[in-house]
Image 1 (cartoon, helix red, strand yellow):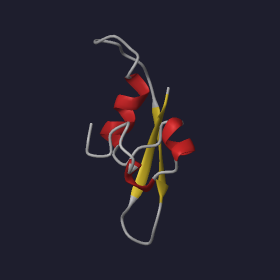
Image 2: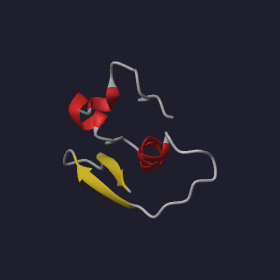
Image 3: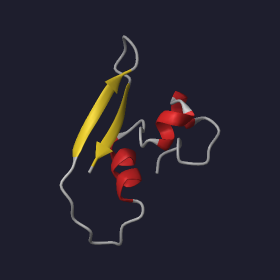
Length: 65
């Protein structure tokens, strides 16, 4: 995971409740969070959501399975 990985106090500015719900700063980290309990090779359809956080190109992502 990127620098904002689970367990860090920073969480990339994402509120703890949202972090626990799967929101992440990168799409890759959101996918990893959604599949973290699955064995290697697991396939599943998913949708992702994005949330704009500012006037800049700063977004959060969440993967729904």
